[in-house]
Image (cartoon, rainbow, N blue to C red):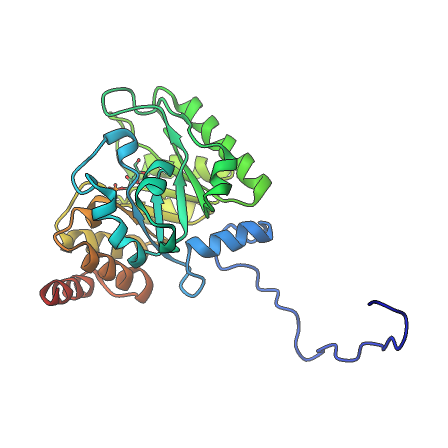
Length: 293
Ligand code: 5RP
């Protein structure tokens, strides 16, 4: 029980050990609150500042695309080998065992399909459910320059406001409308807008020309999507170039789950993203692991 007897003056003030004032390992997030930083530290590895996220949210507008026909069969076994899972709440609850114990970046937008206008989305998950699921971050698209640009920005703003209230980061995904140019100018514009409205990190596509300008011009971390399936060597080269030019990781889907060996691909991506291996070295590892499998 607390009492007033024998109160001693403190004496170990650690004069020779100044308090740690180095602020936070992720750019642009040094002034976030504790809970936000704790969750960001689940998404990005504090020892490398990077992440290998496995995206399998495609069904929310594409339906059962190749590799995602049965999430329980194709994705659940991969879960433990990724740093983070990016998915819808339906995909998560129906098919991924909670015992996987992986941080989740929860897709929180929907409202379209491959048959309709992609930019016409709405916020599809209440913040309460994101909390209930233990999400480490939420995600939605900004469709800059598209028909429903304004509405898509409003969706992400809504998530950022709700997430800020509860310490949950938001990843803004730069969605590309059917007729958008995929160049540095476009992604520079889209990623910067996403950061300025308050997204704690942003997902972009990699572009061959001028990607470094995109990462430099975006004050928060960028992770890259993989895009359409490429030969494994090319996908690993792309990951290497993105990291080399300032990306903080990958959030890849098809180039992992449509790979001839998804587990080897995840391991090779981790080597490139976290260990600084080149694309060629990553591919060598991929081939070794595939041969052993
Ligand atoms: C869909 C997404 C996907 O998660 C994203 O495109 C990543 O998947 P892939 O590497 O297959 O492009 O955000 O809108």
